[in-house]
Image (cartoon, rainbow, N blue to C red; front, side, top):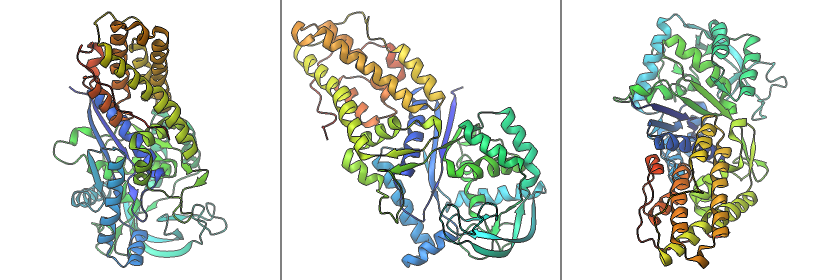
Length: 480
């Protein structure tokens, strides 16, 4: 049986257009999906858009469009942004998709059958931007802690989900499965908050209409957070995709931790569905030192950045600059991006490819035993780092091997010795590190593979490069 790997990201809320903060998460997920594909696993990678709720209805009204027209436009912008960054999901799911609506309604009926849904009245402080209620403890000055705007006092008839019933179940789950919530700082935050007690969750709304009809009462629509979470499961209800559930990892921003690490496992348990293996909650990105926001005018689209610097430069910088595994915040600084582009991509990688391909075109290759530049110790380290979500460290290992190749060229001086055996060893080393580098910067690696006539395939690490006519490579990275 081929090993399966199912990875998802947060589905982005369509009240605003995509920015680099959204892109960071998708680049990480795409890289992990490509890595597992490289290892010959059966991979399913899902991302998409979250399209219901009061906030979307309001945003649509402000543009004079119907909610459906509005979400169609914005959803396409997310799709286009990911294409520009060479992010290739197996499914781009939308919560307005028909199969999602159907799965949500079946899911709710399962929770109802368990006895976990009841009717009541909800009073509380509500933030439309968060689509969430707050307690006075969370918002002592009656302002949303995230949006810094006054909260509305709402009172409405609602259906509740018995979240309080799952307190012990959740604490036991985290204890038995320490990798369920990563990084561990987020796990500790969740545990401490759950120990204070859980309140039942209001899961329907009656004050607006843009949502999935609640199957137990047609006067209600399903609360956006309750139905949106189910998208990860919906994607695996498609014929032939059932084998992928449960998810191996959900990749999310830290602001989604509570919803995904508390509501989601309780919901799945209630519906009698297996739980995902890991929920990874990463840090936020700022842009040139400032919080990314539309109002600040710095929410630069990933498409614009990719056109300015290239998809692979953006991917490399995002993956190399930020210690993803720590869950810490990071700053997307254009100055730091240009430094890495010039010093690492252009000087180290680009120059090596240009040099070796030029010399090989001139002198050719001669088969010999590979002695100095063996990739397998690097491969083992890269595998270990990626298992632990240490993406920056995995890239660091590959570039340490590239440094080794550059030192080898300097030492052997093939431009003086015209030694075809040295060039053969270098061409093999280039093949090997390019295969390992391909999930990170796929476009560039395809170009290198074409220049040196090899296939990007993990099995090719064991096969020496074919002695063939090699032409000088185009410049891979022009200096900025």
